[in-house]
Length: 75
Image 1 (cartoon, helix red, strand yellow):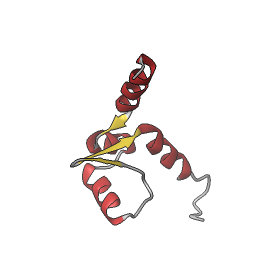
Image 2 (cartoon, helix red, strand yellow):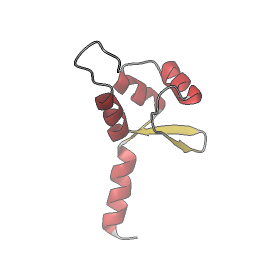
Image 3 (cartoon, rainbow, N blue to C red):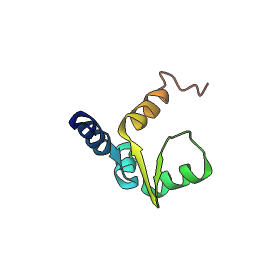
């Protein structure tokens, strides 16, 4: 493995958030995030690493951006 590949892996890992950090980023509780994940209520991508759940910050930001509305309309 090259040094550049190692640095890329480290950088990617640094951008992974656990459920508590992801919930804080979205300003919801970790329990709410868990319910969303288990019920599939929202298409919020996540990784399962053993028993751990991790979210990419970029995925959370993209999910938030997709939910932006300029009016009260839900469509």
